Image (cartoon, rainbow, N blue to C red; front, side, top):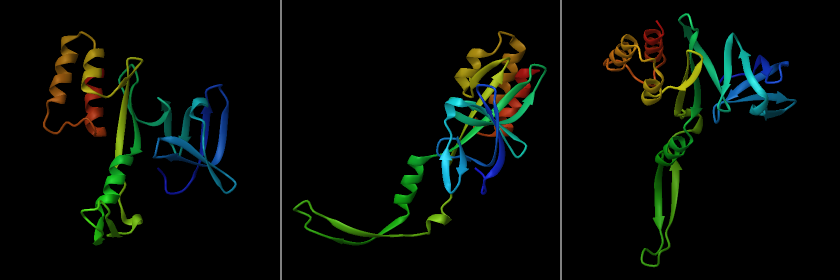
Length: 189
């Protein structure tokens, strides 16, 4: 997540607080990475509760570190976001970024050989990322999804009307932090 490893405080599930001077978030699975000498190690996510890196708080939800985006309302409702690399999309992008330079072989015999050339350097490729969102809504963790939220909303007609109004707006999207915060504010007040 960060270009460089950063100092961090790791809050363990047993109550201990561990400080490390070199931590990062692994985008392959949104887990904690740390340096041990020259080696990059992946932390055991079972033992981690939350992590603070550079004034940003990450909380473990479903074995992934989710950043606390913002909180609203008297119930302290929160939006959490985890970012992962979309590995299948990345592999497809790499395959689509090649030109076949030569074909040879016997087409009738079922044997074919080919050569390819990469069109761009691997460091020039923008990684496809997928954001995952959760709400902490009235003390309950809810995956941000239309069905999940509508099931857990209170029966209050005003809150349900606000919910339907926000999600029907043209600029609302389920993968945008601002849209999701606008929705959380509307259903929290």
